[in-house]
Length: 245
Length: 192
Image (cartoon, rainbow over all chains, first blue to last red):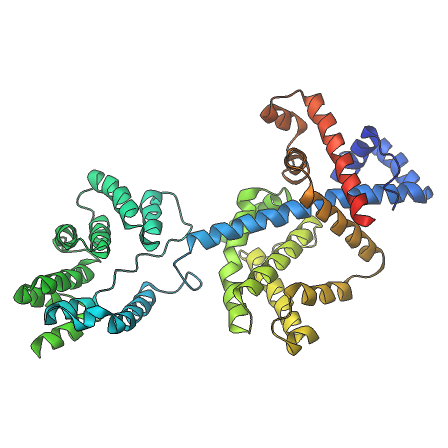
C-alpha cells in the first residue's frame, strides 16, 4: 500500500468528487485516463477509497449498535418478538407469580382470604410498548416505567395525564394497577372503581378481578364475590371456587 | 394506484438509506429484527448470535443498496430482502464446520470463514484495506471522528458542518483534511 506517499488536500478532494459523482466531464476524462495508465496512482486512489468506505461502514456499525440498544431498552421487560399477545404475557406472569407465591412465606401466614389474595395477585403486566406514533407517547413512556417496576415514576406521569382526562378508563385502570403493584390498596381501589364505572371499558373485567382480590384481602368476602362474578379474568373462577370451599 | 404508491415509498426508503438517513436506517433496523431473532433462537442460536447475524445482514443489504444491486419490487421488498439475507447467513453458520463441532465457537470465527470463502482476489485486497480503515476509524480521537462521520457518513456539506461547529467553512475543510491524514497514520500503525 502506498499510504506513505503524500496526498494533498486537492488530491483528496478530487478523489472525493470522483466517488461522489460530482466531477465535471472533462476532469473525469483526464482522471480516468490517469487511472488507466498510472498503476501507482490507481493504487493511491484505491487506498483513499478504502478510507471512505471504512469510515462509512464503521460509522454505520456504531449506529446499528445504538439502534440495538434502543430496542433492548424499549423492550427490556417485554419478551418475544413483540407480536405476542397481551394474554400470553398475562399467563406467563400469573404462572410465575403462582410459583413464587407457593414458595413464599405469605403462603403460611395471614388469614385464609389474605392467602387467596397473595396466591392470586400478580400485577397487570401492562401493555406492549411498541415504537409507535408519538400521539400516546406520554402514556407509553409511563408504561415503560411501569414495566420496569418504577411504579412511583409511572404514577407521577399518569397522574398528569389523569388530570387532563379524568374519565379515561385506560389511565384509571393502569393508575389502579400501579398503586396495587406498590401495595397501596386504598388508592388502587379508587382508580379501579372509576374504571368499572365505565360500562364500555375494555379493562372492566380485569378491574373487577383486581377489585375482587382487594376486597378479599380486606375481608369483604361478599363484595369480593360480586366483583369476581363480573370478571372474565381467567383466574376469577378459580378464586370464586376457593371461596365456596 | 396503491401498488405504485407503496413501491414509491420503498424507493424513498432506498434513497434515504443511500444517504444514510438515520430515521430510515432505524426504521429498517427495527422492521425485521424480532423476526430474525426468533428464527435464530428457534434454530440453536442465542440472542447474541441473532444480533451479530442481523447486523451482518443489515450491512450487506446496505452495501447492495449503495451499489444499486437492489431494486424494490413490492411493498415489503426491502424488509423481506433483509430477512432473507439474515436467514441465509444463519443457515450458512449452522452448516459451517465450526458450529457443528462446538456450539460455543465465537461467532466471529464462523463469520470469518464464510467471508474468506466469499471474496477473492482484488475484492479481498480491498476488503482487507477497508477493514484496516474501519479499525483505525474506530480508534480515532473524538473531534476528528465526529467531523468525518458528519462528512462521509451523514453526507453533510462542509458549510453545514462549519455552521454547527461555529467555524469558517475553510477551517472545516482544513480540519477534515488533517483528520484524514491522522486516519491514514493510524492505518499505517495498524499495518506495521
